[in-house]
Every structure is written in structure tokens, then in C-alpha cells.
Length: 409
Image 1 (cartoon, rainbow, N blue to C red):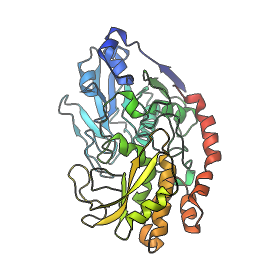
Image 2 (tube, rainbow, N blue to C red):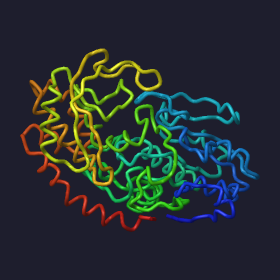
Image 3 (cartoon, one colour):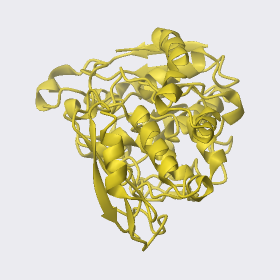
């Protein structure tokens, strides 16, 4: 295994950029990608791979001595417009004519044919910091393919929108490994994609990575306490239903509602910040949750009707039905705990449902999202949510110690 972490000098162009944080792609662009001169590269990117309004594909295409041999896109496609779970087809890039291979279709990792003539794979996709967001699964599987073919793998680091200090949730158990959970890490891991790539290799989270030549180009100006609003970077919706930072912030907790018959706010313009059901009493739920005095959050009773929204969700759960529930209003993003909050909201709805089976309709999916059956068992046995939360404290402490060797900032 060869792992290298490096930063290229930004040079005199630094003064042209106002934001306090520079992505790795930004740093490389200032050097005209000299580090890749003479190489034919494969770009694993989507619409978030932007530098000051310009896409990485165009910037690399214009760089002297660098040729784009192939482009690879993750879930939601190269342009980020495909809905969740929809397979994406291969195609051609309009700008360069380079083949675009889908890693969310018939293949989930680059095949030997896709890698023909590729000297280096470069990963540059904005993540949201939650284990079940599939971009980090795509990264790891692409790293495996690179290792098998002796191709260096470079990660252009980007910020974790939640910051690097918040770590929470169950650590994934092997029995629940899936594409929405590849690694034994907590739900909110508090790592950048570059840090996580180093940990995947160093801790052997996936087989066959021993000989991988991994390079991570670091961010400039990012610290562990830095959340997205502190970066000065514009938010590009990472997927159709994560339109803003506010959604990304609550997503690690309210994503649990994907395993239920209740609405997680899809079919509105503020998904994951709303949860509701036809049988729910929104004011009663808001009162119950506000009485728990959870950190950095308050709850408002809400009534809404999920609708089909082009380019977001054309068939949302409970489409056309009036539902009641709660709106999550973050009052302090620094103290807010999304996973813990999600547990409390899930419990409140479960206990308010007329019958458990009316609410919890996809228990196997809940286990995949949680990474364990312990959450499901806690709901069914009536364990208080605080006891469920205390149940992961030991594994979080162990993970913090384990990840320390891979932290770059």
C-alpha cells in the first residue's frame, strides 16, 4: 500500500478568491493541473465538481498536457438530475465527446473495458457526511478497481458539510453491509472524503487495496469546526432531494423515515426538514418533541401535501394526500445533533401511530440505514430513545480513536 497526502502551492492567484476554504480541485486548477501532465485521466465526478463556477471536466480538458480518457458518474448521474435509486445509462459528454460511464447502472465499479487507456483515476464529488449517502460507496469500489489494474487513485478533497467534530450513530455491522453502507463507520462519521479514503485503505475496509497508490490533495483553510456556511463556498445540490445545506444538516436523522410509511418531506421543496403522516397530530407531536429540549432544534406543527416535482421527485410517498407532522427548525447548527434528533422524531411517530405496522413498513431497510437491528428492537421493545443513543457511545469512542491516524485537518 502506498498512501500519499500532499498540497500544491496555490501561487499568486490566491488573492483572486475570497472564500476562506479552497477545495482541492481549486488548488490544482491554480497550477493548471501540472501534477497530471502527460497522463490520460479518468474523472469520477458529478455536477458538484465545480471550481468558481467552472466544472472540473472543462478545466482539465483545457489544461496543458492532460487528456481525459473517460468520465464516470455516480448515483443521480453526471448532472445530478436522476432521482434516488434510478439506474443511470452510459453516454457521451457533450463538451468533450469523452465516454461517460455510469457507476449506478449495470456496473457499480469501473470495468476493465472502461479503464482501457486510463493512467489515473481522479475522484471529485461533494459528499454530505452521512454513511448511507452512496457517493462514498462509489469511491471505495472505484478504488478497488484501480488497485486491481495498478492505476493510481487521486481524491480531490472537499469539505464535510457537517464539520469534522460531530460523530454519531451506530457503527455499521457486517451483516448489514450494502451499497448504502459499505464501511464499519458511524452514520455521521465527521470525515472528509479524502480522510475516509485513507481510512478505507489503512483499515482494510474493502479487500484488495493493499497495493493501491492513493493520493489525497488536501483542502486549504478547512478545520474540523468548519461547517458548510463557514466555507464561503456556494452550495450545489448534491442530489435532487438535498437542495441546500439545511437539508444536508438534518438528513442523517430524518433519512430513517425512508423505512416508514410516513412522508420524509419528498414532494416538497424542503425534503427531510418535514415529516408527516395522514394519521398524525402535528401539534401533539411538536409539543412532545419540544418538551424534550433537544439541542439546537425546535419543532413546528405543519400540514402539507406531497406533490410530484419535476427533477426532484415525480412519485413521492403519499402523493396528493394531506398529511400532518412536524417541521424541523434548526436554531443552532453548531449544537444541533441530527442523528440523535432523528431517533427522537422516529420514536415520537412510532408511538403515535395507530399500529406499529401502519408506520414501520420497511424494517429491513431501517436496519440497513441504521447499520444494525438495535434501533428496530429498541422501537419494538419500548426502550427510551436516550437509552438507544447511549448504546452507541462506546463504539463512537472506539471509532474516534481508530480514525485519528487518518485525519488531515
